[in-house]
Image (cartoon, rainbow, N blue to C red; front, side, top):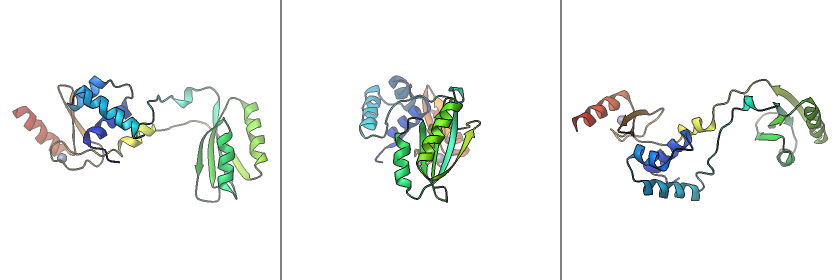
Length: 190
Ligand SMILES: [Zn+2]
């Protein structure tokens, strides 16, 4: 993606808190505010940051969700139709006999009936289940693990969850307990 360490760290901070201020990010990374501002603008221009958004707990929204799976001979056509429907939130093309799966939000049983009628018109076999509860990890959490970071002590790429060392509001990322211990020792010697 052509991102350097500073870009990656900015992304990490923003994934955890989209409202993190420029001064807070600058402080955490030990860089200047204009640098952060410039990098953020770049990340937006490159389309890496698409928008700054909020995550709502879906269980608190009114109505309920349903999961529908279809056995479509023309999956692309079905996907196009589903995309036009406002109540459909997500569409997946999948392997297996049921090759299109979607999630829809429904206000009440009447709208569920309407939805089933719309699905029937597609003339493909389908199955609908009501989702009783959603236990979703925010996409952000999953993305965090995909952003490359290197260890501030040994320089090696950090695989897995980084260990964080904070000093005067600045954050350092370490790859393992040994590096954390050595880094801690080095910083205290200063
Ligand atoms: Zn290390």
